[in-house]
Image (cartoon, rainbow, N blue to C red; front, side, top):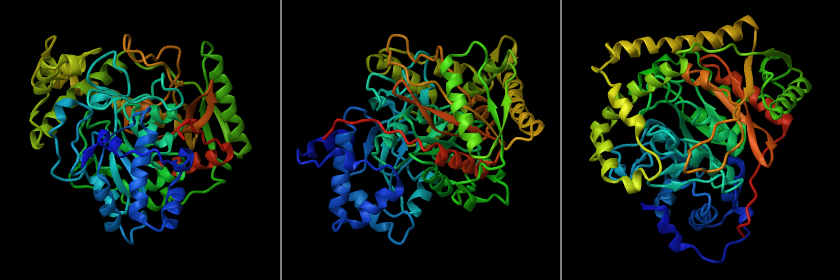
Length: 508
């Protein structure tokens, strides 16, 4: 194994046109691999080429060496997805590569075993070629962060414009797929960390119901909200990966809630005309919203109607006053518990969150050059057995959990009362400029998906349109375990909309 930077020593000037080296689908990659006469040489060139293509966007944080990748290819013989490369976010355990969460404090964190989902990918023949960069600690270290930046991996950039942000925290996972470095990747989400980068980079992102995919071997934030999910250039490929990584795992009790009759094969048995006769709740913009939001919603409406679907306009009601503060406290309380447990069992010299805080303080010039670690500090303060304003943190946590049930009831009520097959809305405003002084800029934007994240319900985003040269996505949301329905709805819309954006590259 070796870090990405070492591969630059191998780069030659004898590249063919870089455009031909970008792969937009699993099928396309498999066809290219199948016709190659020397599979080992193909893989060696592929690894060199993706480094060349990624040199400015910086979506990859580490890679296995080519000999190991080729060995994995050989071991995958007779498997359905033999040789299909996939990048995983660098907060997921994969044997032989440090699992860093993007932090230089975790460079010695070499896992003892593969994460459950990595094991399932390998058993299906996928080539886990390396790790994607991310927002450090999955964007939950401090305020005023810049998505896509980590102290270990540096800044991942938006492939549509290098001065713009790729959104986080699964920034590298989305940008790599948008560039065509791999046809598929794995991201993780607590609240928007799959869906936002997918939307902003113009790819498909699936955040499944919490529990459909095991979190074992993933550096945690929230036991209530965390999940892993796939990213791809098209719905079918994302669905293939989701089917591969889904299933029960005794090491993650959330997976025990998967219904006994869950239709895993239905995730990939997609129907082009599935939208016909379906009833879609379309979240409509408010009076004060930007004009572009009305244009985008009207575009989506036209596609639905031309596909034979019925549209029901939906206006979301205001959320309770304590909604966001309660949501934040859940993350803080669960983060310190989950991270301490992960670190205690790891090989890392960091054995609890406080040791990371101390490391960051001792290495401020590298770790906190433009933003701090406020969420680490507030998470420690919110940990079990503490007191805040006369209440124990455990009491505050139990009260905060009420918003999880509220979110589930809120979504279910809309779906049931309107007899909807799904709730659909704009995913996220387009990319913003990278700004190290002020951090991420979410002003004058739009977005849906927080309710799906907090409730643990599924959320799928697919590319809808370009706005001023940047992609933006459309979200399909439903109730728990409704992935088969949502994937089919998204696939049917995708086929009718026929929008598969691709960033331009001048690398030749």
